[in-house]
Length: 168
Image 1 (cartoon, rainbow, N blue to C red):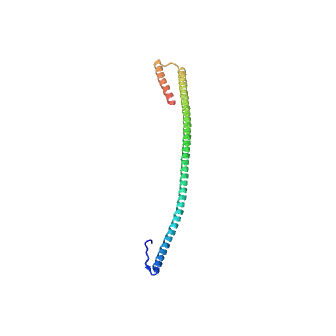
Image 2 (spheres, rainbow, N blue to C red):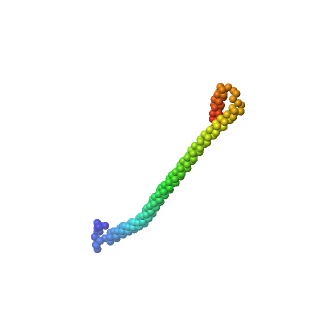
Image 3 (tube, rainbow, N blue to C red):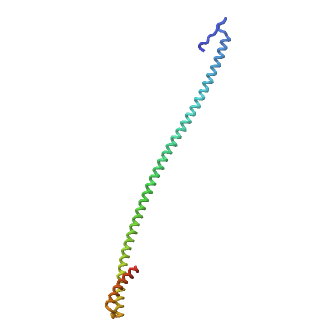
């Protein structure tokens, strides 16, 4: 536009040239105004989108923060619950071990008593068998030979021990 030169005519500049230039200038100016308006609208839309993106970003950050807090709380809760379960399991295991030890001691004591009773019963049986043997000897007399008597006593002693062992 600055380089535009008009031809001079009799009364100054050529009117048609000036009008053509002004029309061209007006057309270009209108185009610039339209373009400026389009840029202004695009800028407004960009500002609106930027505000929306900032709002979304803020929401995402808040959501992420809440998720992290929730995750941390869940992890802490799981750790506490695991520790509690472990402690309860240890207590229960200790109780079971103590109960098993008590039961083992009771069974051991019962076994000792049974062995003592067994010994007493064996001694009583031997005593009963010996006294019955003596009664039989007295009842049937001692008329048999001494050798047979000794053999019978040895057989009787063996038989008594075999009988007692078989009974137990």
